[in-house]
Image (cartoon, rainbow, N blue to C red):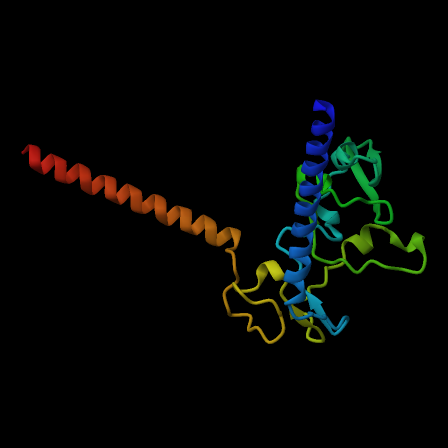
Length: 215
């Protein structure tokens, strides 16, 4: 009898948990049903990538010293650095540099550990081609200046949901001057500096008032 009651209690508890999970999932569904659909008319409208978006890698040939640090830190040893040793100067001479974006995982390790900052991540994400061999970029293709959604006159840039003002769901017809929901990293740093300066001023005033009371 005890085992039977235990089974019934376990079954009831599992049924209640399942109903609770189902209710939570349906609540999210019903919440989205109240929202208006937001359609981005690509390619005439494009979403603005986030500040830390890792897109196509930009390469500066003049800064590269052929140290091959990018090759060693790459999880798949992807960058190809073609160089020769100059016997007169006893220094490396770079001939060619290439990255195959058909294999690249855009982890950003090569950009992070480059000692001369000749590599940088851009916000360019349109890399689709009809031939996978076209994704193997040499130093000339990597050195091409990246395209930007905000500077392209033929494109209407739209802000993503995380960068819209509070309570706004549709990015259309939102002026670029209107503040977003969160703050930029530069604005956060500026706020921290202002708060630290204010704390220092408050401490100095308290020290001066304490010294005047002692006198």
